Image (cartoon, rainbow, N blue to C red; front, side, top):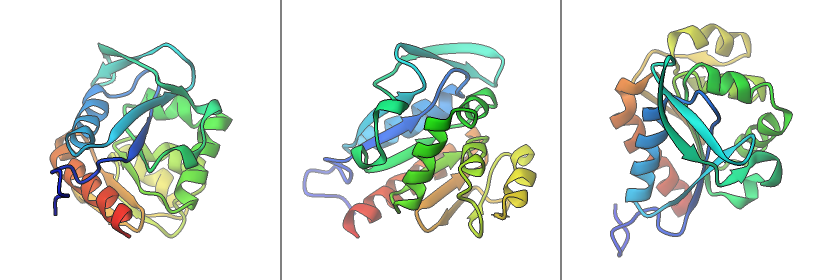
Length: 188
């Protein structure tokens, strides 16, 4: 269903929480899908400046300008959250108290959250996967189970306010589900 102006997410502001090492395609494709539906997307990170994205964790890709520092924003400032992967990105985020707190507050507020690949590491650290069903990159699945979550091997999984996917190959389905979840949350 499309709004009258053709943009289902017009007027919404979505945070993408990422830092150095983010998998570029998992940052760029969801951002493009959300912006194409009218959302304003803001890059939130650990420090001001730019973050270095990567391709397949080892090849430097583009650099992206940070819009907000996580310590200076609140979940109430945004209508949705995206947690892209790459291995070093969520590994750094889960070691930052402000980032973990931001993610925890976001999930528990009921606002919609999209997470892909290694991104669930931050959800695990925030202790918000207990009794939730997610998918992820295979190496993260044991961590999700150990944190009380249920893991399935599917292209995309929606559980309440969480939508998750396994890897960059799932991006088309993930982006569609992300837009649908954010639009449904807006309507609800």
